Length: 168
Image (cartoon, rainbow, N blue to C red; front, top):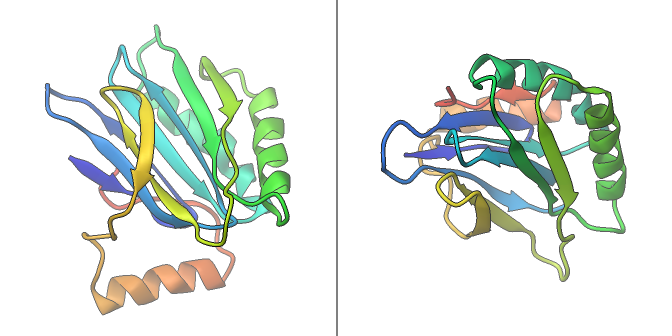
């Protein structure tokens, strides 16, 4: 299974059998990705934050995550991407601030690398390993004109974070 997360979206995936499950997001430039994996229970999530205000969605995202997570769990999380000379440090600061208030999910979050150079990258999270890889693919499942226009409208109107299509 391959779950795709676009800009200002989040999603969850759960491993049901021995097949590989990936959660990916393409073209992260000044945005910040926050992902977490509980390898023991085979549950993972990925959030693609594009502006500092979008971190305010974290409490509701964590409540949704709690509804699919067993009592015994531990999520190893990481922040990835962004650029130091943009609003990315502000996004990261807001994410850490929201996480410091939460008591719903047992997790630890580390700061991963910022981007260097001019081109952003995509990330793919492997639920089997709990690690990320650079994702160079393109979004496959949402390529109709209607879906593209709907997503662009969502971004341009500064709408809140939303759950990705195909997320559990």
